[in-house]
Length: 591
Image 1: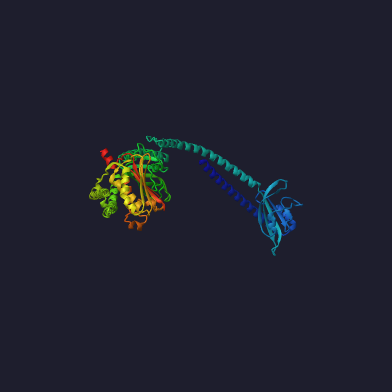
Image 2: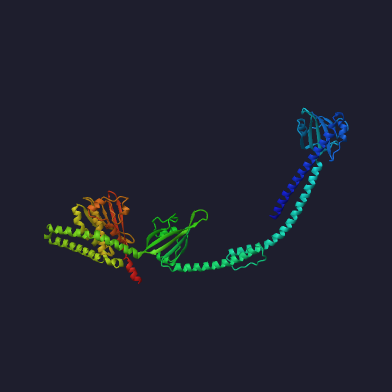
């Protein structure tokens, strides 16, 4: 860099000097040509005798060496010259002569021609016209100077400048080398120190060799190394502290990087998800736990998103919060990752379920046993009372329905216990073949009134489920009653049992009006009615299926629906084959 700088300076300076010298020499030569031409005008042409021009011109002397003088007529023919003693005189062709013939004095340079000895030379010429009183050109004084001497002088100057440049470059190279050596040592030490620091070796101190800028830089590097070591120690301490806090939090914390890879998961998160070692990516996480509530990695401008999902016997609320890297220029954001905070909301969900069940029982479930009691009572009053066997059967059913109402009233009286999670399902073994036959008998009178067919196909072997008999009866009667209500006359309702590896499936299939595709996903919502006017006319509140769904989930089962509009609906209850462990039982077992 220093050599380049010196070279540029010398070239610019030398060029400027050469151009200045050339201009000076040119101006000096032009002035000499002008003075000589004026002297010829005064001493030769001023005599007025053209015949003596040659003689007088030879006597005219100039102070400059190498200048030639010539007198030309208006047509450019030579009348007198200092280059020959007698005719024939040389003839000249020059741009300056043409300008003189036109009445204008002019210079010209770069014209090459031979001298009196036949040598090729480069000339600097000047032509000055002489005019009469009328302004016509009578003579042209043509002087020229050999520019070879000037070129030689400039060439010599150029050689001198080139030599000076070479010498300057030599000394600059020597000084640059010495100067570079004074910088290289400390810079190499700084480079090595920076490399060691990048590799994590913070325990280093460089020696300060001088008080100049390099020495100050070395001192700053040592200070930076010391401060960085201190900061890394504090950062490590804070990291350990945060890790201890994270792993001892009651809430689960999971962090995913920008590419979806897992960064960390604390112990609480692994316990909530029932995993010994959390090693799932973001996509694997949401797929494993069936989180299908629109959670996606890049949530745009959303600050967070909450999703509740089941894990075994628990319900986990997950809060997805993205964090971004904000660029220094502009407001553009790049997602850095997502932090998921997990909270066990099982208790809250159980309390919420109890409140929902309370509303459902008040608004709907009291109506079902009352309707049954009323129907059988009216039948007895119509004359069946005389048939003792049938009357006793009807009275038995009325007694059973009265017990159901007593159970519901008891639940209403115990509502104050719901918030304290004191309501328990009384799980017993229920043989579903007999249970469903009883249900069919209970609802026969309703189907006969509408000329419908209600049938049950017993399963080939006993089907034992574990459930709260009253609640199971409530679910089945609700579904059967809905099938009767929403099926037209002459329709058929068929109850049958199937099974798979884990569940007994009790299905109620009707040939009623069916449910549209748009309404089907919402039939389990509370107070939702497919046909609001028809539902109100039939006394429905829109809570029955929601209650049934909650009861089935309380038994660790589920309730599903399949329907084709205009052809009928199939409601299927899935009961676990093994006795389910309820939340309160799990808590008691843990305790």
